[in-house]
Length: 167
Image 1 (tube, one colour):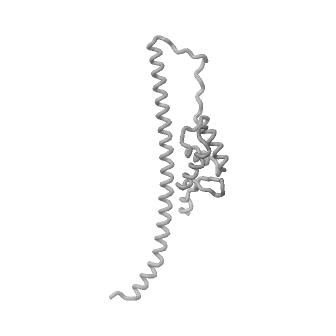
Image 2: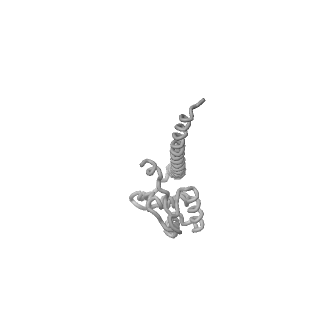
Image 3: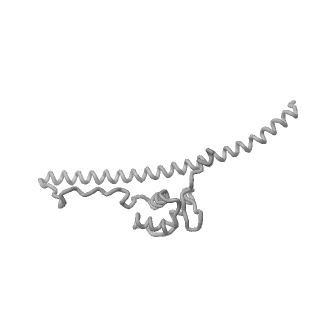
């Protein structure tokens, strides 16, 4: 038969241990959710860069084929300008990603932005997109936990909770 004193001591220890373990588990769940969001964002960014690389590679191959055809036909391509055109920096070009990519990239550069600032930026980067699409994508980003609405009509990227877990 187990001694009642030992059982009470064990009970006291378990009463301390159970809440501590639950708190650690909640922190770990939060960390897993945060890492899952970061992984998803990284995968989306990689998919975008892969599409851009594929498009650039296809344009390169088409240009090479055009030059081969011109050379085979015995003609030389003459440029109207004496030097090759300047390369346009990718940062100066409209983003070729999704509306969500444009929104997230814009908010990464700022602490927060209003709905009108976001729609103006999306309009610059994706002139083909209507404001309704911005609202839909903003809602999805909030639902997925990537953005928060600190106030009505204002959005910001969710801050990483991992720093508070380490302190």
